[in-house]
Image 1 (cartoon, rainbow, N blue to C red):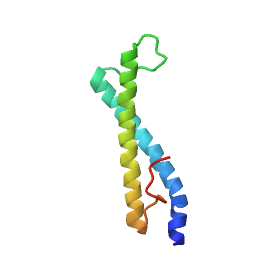
Image 2 (image 1 turned 90 degrees about the horizontal axis):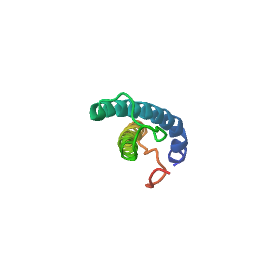
Image 3 (image 1 turned 180 degrees about the vertical axis):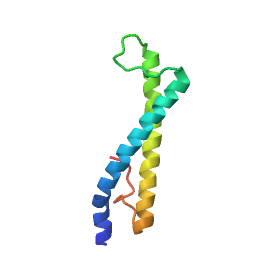
Image 4 (image 1 turned 90 degrees about the vertical axis):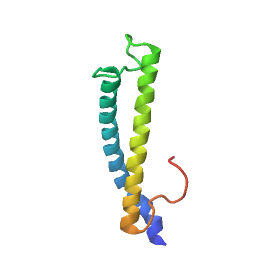
Length: 98
């Protein structure tokens, strides 16, 4: 029983590293995706005066979708690896991400 109580705390550093790696991978995936979609090296920024609303919001939507998918895949893979290694799921309950 103690193992289940301590594992989520022990998983936090692992989750942090996985999040950092996932964010880096998502950033690279977004850069490549944007280059394929728009044939540009840089996506528009919200403060880019020369870009229109549609372009800025489209870039944000694509970026958000890629980050969400990569983050979920990395989080899920990490949790499954912890479960295989320890026999315990790293989250204390069935709730979602806070």
